[in-house]
Length: 478
Image (cartoon, rainbow, N blue to C red):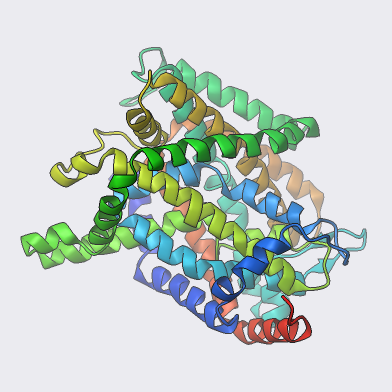
């Protein structure tokens, strides 16, 4: 059995029915505890994004949301959606939506609790996240669960969502833009050839990451903060253009997504065993990629929310929950619909509809195919969008992982400094793994992170209910 097959097996175990049920139940419990806050107060939540904060803390609410979004809007939106559709069929989008709808309440609850249970250190800086939510909210006897979350969080940053998937997505997009036929081979590993576009692109990104993390050249991240919103506008413009140009195909695309989510092809064939497998594959990939993208229930966003300048945890919880709406229900939906529309006819008649394409290459080919023109311009724009999205995601996850390590090491920075070099090494080797393999690795650690976090959210649903009720009784105007 190959390494990729072993990873796929482990991924299937971690993201089995129990984990899927746990995540959906957590979202349902948080929805009930918060009185359906994602439906009743979504408008107020978006208004709160720009509210001036005047409480205790280090960051504005808007800055905390941007920090969380910079770590979520990345390869999950462009590459992750594509891999979910390839592996789980168009129906994966349905399960992604379902998880996001309930995940919005999950994001609210976990960020609100992170602020409630955060800790102010002796030097004045604030540390918070699921590790303190578990330790303080559930009690000291559950500290082992808090430690487990922090360990998985550090590993997720260095081995999954924070490094290899991001750099792999960047180099895949660079190769698609500059050497789509993989003609300029730099070297080979086994049966896989790697082009100079991949090698050079990977080296440039690795150096840039090292300069920020080790060298402290903050001007690079400052530039990224300005460029990423522009890239987001370009990406949304391209996606919306596809949907407008193909508005008549959107109903058929939705029909295909819903039918695929419940094993429509297998039903026609009468193969009930295959029906179940198709549905579970769609659920697994849809929910896993949804969490990869919006991180609802993962426990990462609360780490960014904890230092917010507020004395009202509910306020920032509402602000942060808008990130799930923006990330999955808007941007991921746009990507997914574009792919389904672009390959709609092929999906209906052929099992190899994607012609072997996956990840960034599939999304780039879809956009080029539908928008027309010479194709290269669109692919180049997507490469730029993905490169900047993924770069800021890498930096965001270094922050998350360092905070997990800070909790584990009891503020000993020596361990953090060693971790930074390992983090950079993981970025450097990321381009040389298969797209599906790096996403499977990321899924594994995402699932392992989510499990202790979701257990805590269910255990503390009474606190969520009490805090929410108290806030809206004191602020009926919201």
